[in-house]
Image (cartoon, rainbow, N blue to C red; front, top):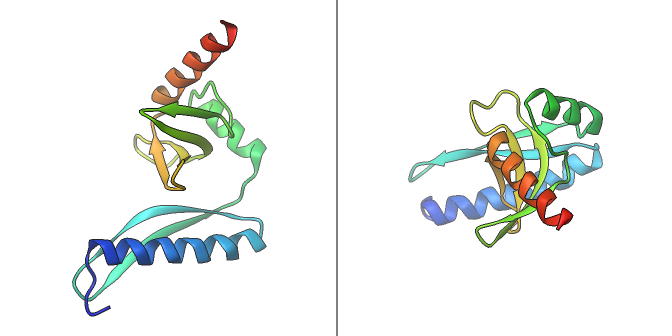
Length: 125
C-alpha cells in the first residue's frame, strides 16, 4: 500500500476489527467499532471493549426506555439487524446493533422500539 485511501482504510479497519474480536473473545469481551479517520499517510481506528454482562446491559436498556432486549432481531429496509448492546454515553444512537453484513451500527432507542412494536403486532396476527 503506497498511500491510504477510503477503500484501503476500510480494508485495514475490517482486518483489525476481526483480529481484535478474536483476542477479545479469548477474554470474554466484545468489540465495538467507534469509527476512525485517515490521511494519505496515516490512519486510525477507535474500538471499545465491552463486558457482555447481559443483566447489566438489560438494565441499561430499560433505563434508556428500551422495550426490547439484547438479541432482538428485525428487518428494516431490506437489511437484518440484531441488538447486541447499549451505549449510554452516546448522544443519540444508544442502541448498538449488528447488521447482516457484520457492521456494527448505532440506532436510536425510539426507532428500535417502533420495530419491536411492529414485530409484536405481526406476531399477534
